Image 1 (cartoon, one colour):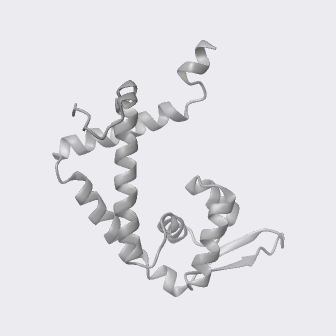
Image 2 (spheres, rainbow, N blue to C red):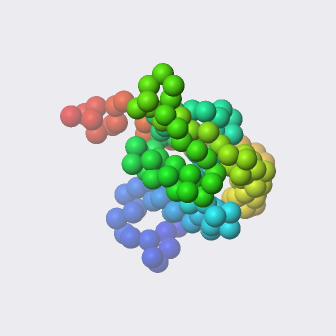
Length: 159
């Protein structure tokens, strides 16, 4: 395990894995954001596009559930994406209060650039890892996410 740097807060020694996850998430998000800016996208918009590329014509609620973001964030992102000509939102036939989201040709054309961006980000992220380390990291990351998302956290169990 890497030793804390001089800039690492001393209290981070109480949660070295959590601090490493924080540093990783921050670095990954910053790199992804820079790559997305080159595509005129904001962070998170590529996730919405990826969902729509897999299944066009989803409702805003379905998109919200699939990306795990809050309503206001998804609504703001979709509005920006509509303004950019990537998608259109229209009322559902069965319920005019429900908005259905469809990609435009411009939005569908984002498939290859987004795939290339994710591949480049993956290569950058794994460049210091062996294939086995990268596979192990993915399994470990999902195990940590499952633990964090489990109903009972250790502090709650002892309370």
